[in-house]
Length: 632
Image (cartoon, rainbow, N blue to C red):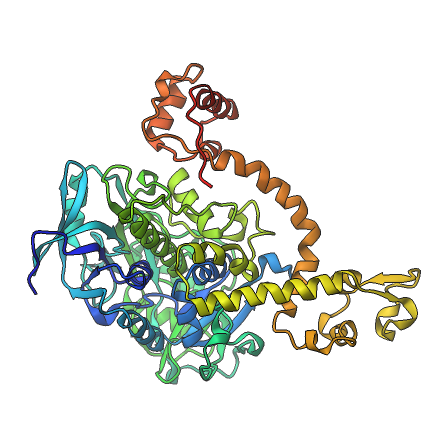
């Protein structure tokens, strides 16, 4: 393949992980000529660690990706082999869907969906040596096999592959994943071009042979059947036969396990000085858990990686001790005395780029037309990476079209919270999304991500007419049934016998009172509610309607909070603003603002060292000088 000296592609995407997949998918779907460069085509969409998608906070991201026309939710429903609703005993705002997937089927469907757009997407196996940059503008890349390849934009989404090293005990070798390469040339180049970087650590547990494990004494974790094939809002449009559902199992470490880890702690690279960088706080290694927490046992979830093969992922046993010690640890656990390790656990130390130097469209503040997304920005998890890849892809499209950037707000999405946190605060350790990171978690639920974001997707032409028609009909149906119930009253005499005890002193009972009573199960009363309208009873959206009734009062109060935030969040700070010319700002504040270069006025309150009075001083300066402009 020969490339010209002109712009061969609209964009070049470096990396075939979850960020690269979403960016490639959305850009090729928009008919933009895109090049993805990866070490190995067979590893595109690899689930390098846990074979699951979703979880607390993370499921919100996947549902938002789906609502914006992205791929991950669809892939999960095509490969899900165990579905769970987490926090089922709590409110809907903190519930989360978590899905165990078949790794091979997941990857197969990644390539199947990317190949639909092969007229616009080229995938090359190659190594990138450097970027082509002139006057702080990127014009393409230089690769090992093909030399210079030119493009309008470049997206870096290299995951854990920049200057990465693998550690198993005292062994240390180059690689971003076991049996894979590390991008040494590119990382050395990036260090030279004034991009601030650092190092982080991640890790993974050993993979185990299923046929050498005795599952009899473990707690079986059966798939929640009622939500199978429902991760994507549009799964009902696809008539796909569901996969065989597999069980996961819960077991525990024990006092003997603790003793073994403590005895050999000095052999762990995390404790003997070989690795000094920080790992993920919320997914610690076994060495960290036993060293830091005084517990006799820790949860271990045994999760199948595929439907048919014999590989088990022991979630909770991430470690990087020598292989012989890993055997001692595994064999100390009840039911695993003869268990075989197929692949040892290991740690990876890798280079990341400081996201503080990114605009909220994920374009570099230093190098024009260079976008950065995924784990390279200091995040952890497939879902966080995919979210960034989708946003970067959309903004690359808009950049080339000379249109305003697509900025998701922390007021309308968890993706907005994620990107705002990265670009405003930076990171000191691997970043993971949680419900608690959002001020508006009652509003930003996973069940209403389509309601919040599908209209934006339609505006950007990211979803098909069929999906938009489905969404419009869904909203119309929900509104009709909601209004029907809202106006409906019942006399005490007509109530079902089993609910009368909750309304002894009331004559007229609202539908809302029945629906929102936590002691009354909705499934038991829905026939009563719709006995005069059986058509409504067949609606697929009764769950959403129930949630609307439950949260309506809370949301009225939260909308007041949203309106309060929205004003300052949408005030754009001009790129050419000179803070030292604004009277009343201290030198400390000026230095901080020049370092962080915030995009929006509302970001100021989330930057350490910036006081509310500074925000008002800048606001008055913008108003006085007729510089006020809004991102609506």
